[in-house]
Length: 257
Image 1: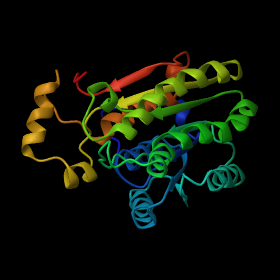
Image 2 (image 1 turned 90 degrees about the vertical axis):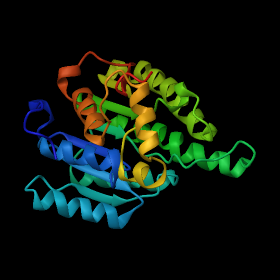
Image 3 (image 1 turned 30 degrees about the vertical axis):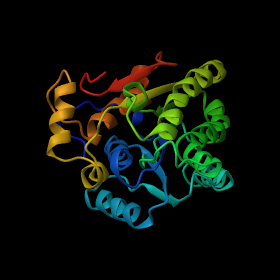
Image 4 (image 1 turned 135 degrees about the vertical axis):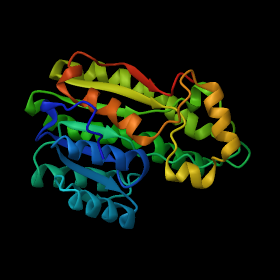
């Protein structure tokens, strides 16, 4: 949960927030942090068990209980239905955090047309369609904030992630294009690029002590990165404190890039 020593944003209290991929990792931290700010949070995820456990933990902590809707974000019709359900239950979304992604490793040789399209659907396509779905409500509300999560992976040219890197690089272009399209309606669009965040998934699948040391060697700041470090940047971009920030990319990587 949000540490007592960090900022509170009065403008987030009561604000309706949608987080995609909110059941675990960075997404779960986002849900927790927005709930701690008093926002009305909805989140989408394909992992029902993890998402229900998160809702139970937030309820136990005495925070506003988020609305969880199961959703495979590759199904754009289901995504649009979920946005409509949130609007009906909570009101129009005025903060969208496009967080959902999958960084499974893959070689160039193994990629086929279907798997390529699936990787883009998982990591890029839904960000556009989620923004498209929430925009009318933001326009009617007089403005809003969209935060797209990219990654430094495409800047580092990491191995065995070509489709993921392509998607994450594309998110930067998407962010700038949507900022231009949606700016006249008072909707801000920014990107956040996390570094190597030590989520449970990363620790279980790819990070050992040698990788931890390598990551710290690359960083200017010699501290490991965790999901709350990303969540706090997103809170700022969602709040009115960043009201004239748009079309920008904000990196949270300890100075690795």
